[in-house]
Length: 260
Length: 174
Image (cartoon, rainbow over all chains, first blue to last red; front, top):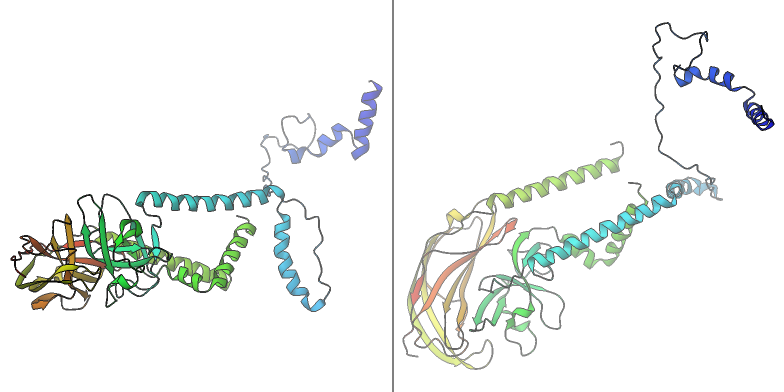
């Protein structure tokens, strides 16, 4: 034996105080009493059947908590502080990789929503394919908070009786009213007049000063489908902006912090 | 399911999905229905004037006055997914100035639960029948149609024209 091997062996023995043979003998049962067992080694079954051993369940890898839980200096607030800091412990326990994964997940959700919206815009040809009714001028058909699905295809010319959503030049709020009159020229240029079902007069009072007719360029879309009540959330968020910020903040926090 | 919050959460999610399914069911069961019924229109009196258009651009335009009768039975259109019918009587014609003109003369809202049989006689128009120019005088072919917009509880908003229409012509006389 070379001195190197001797010193190595000594080193190994020194660690546990046993030789290799002793170690193997001691752990044979734990390792399953395999065929490597020596003859005359003792308590192996004559039938040679392996003792059944449960496999240890793999725990998900949790890096050890290295920091100590902080203690609030004011004893009465201790309970409250522990509650909120338990929640932060969860955040701290995530390692960098999981944090990046959460952020990327969030980004994926946002970008898929955006792609679905843009895809709808292309299919329907309208710049705003889903709108919420904001005023009561089309009652009893549409109330405030109803959702309308719009299309704006060029092949369908505007005809009388259709419900159009249009924007007046200079104003940004779209209006949902019904077409009352159309005059179409030979070249396809259409000018039309609208009126809300619940209004007594037509919309000429709403148009710009001196404007008597609407044209295709003012139209956002024609209403084709309708779902009641769903848009109330949008109206609430518009009327109470604090509510909107609170909802967005909580949602963002929830998505970033929650593990799954 | 051991806290009030998680119970409330799953109850809310369940009721939301049930309502969404019901809404979709309402829509899909009535989406392809034919909503047309026969309609009889009759025009009893026609008068034509040429005045300044006080509802819009102040030019002298033709103003028509008609009195009409409508007979229609709308009962077959109403089902579980119809909230109301918006009826409108429109006149369609073409002139020298414009290839196609459509003007709504009269409209009515028929809610679910209202009497669906229409038997209207000697009705005056609700809206002024102004032309964009002087195209009504001597116009041979002005077509009156009764159409309706079906407003559902949830789903598609179709525009349906009644089968059967009334046609009239203006004499070249003011």
